[in-house]
Image (cartoon, rainbow, N blue to C red; front, side, top):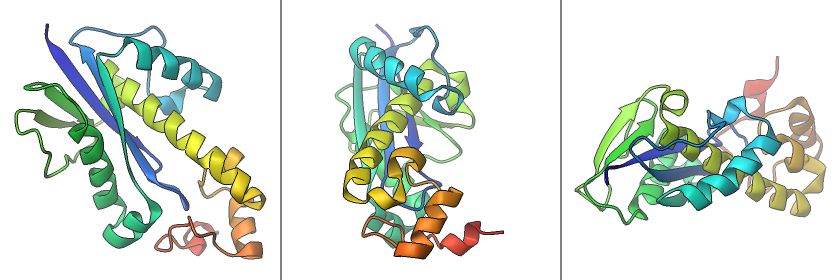
Amino acid sequence: MELIAGVDEAGRGCLAGPVVAAAVVFLKNQTIQGLRDSKRLSAKKREQLFQIIKSESQEHSIGLANHLEVDQYNILKATMLAMQRAIDQLHQNDIQVLIDGPHCPVVVSNLSLRLEPKIGGDGLYASVSAASILAKVTRDQLMEQMHIKYPQYRFDKNKGYPTKEHLSAIQEFGPTPIHRMTFKPEMYSN
């Protein structure tokens, strides 16, 4: 039984909340109908696939780096930390791990895993597409919970991304405790 893992993240371009990574282990040629990069799916379709992926994958895990870690390390290092945390939860040994993007986490606890960066991997490999969906849905759920605490920022709609509405809320109310202070809202104004 040959296994392959995919890893992807969600939330790199946000002004608030964590960056979330997921790892999904599939059989080498396994796929799920309708699977593609999470950015190319509706929220409803992502939610449907989220449940299917969780039930049909051989294994899956989530890792995150919170907003403080994003500020402390920078977004790339925080993303690698979230990916490392997701990978470190896998119980599989001696498998190929495909990482979406040009970078791989530097340190993982399981040295038998073979990590490979794959630019555009979320559009090429089923396991990476599945990880993209798990990361996105998990992060969206976290931000919907934050909307209850900070309703004026409309995290239920913008999920922490720099929308016009979100930027206006920051100007009016200031940043929340979950905003990334190294991401300056003026970077997004025209």
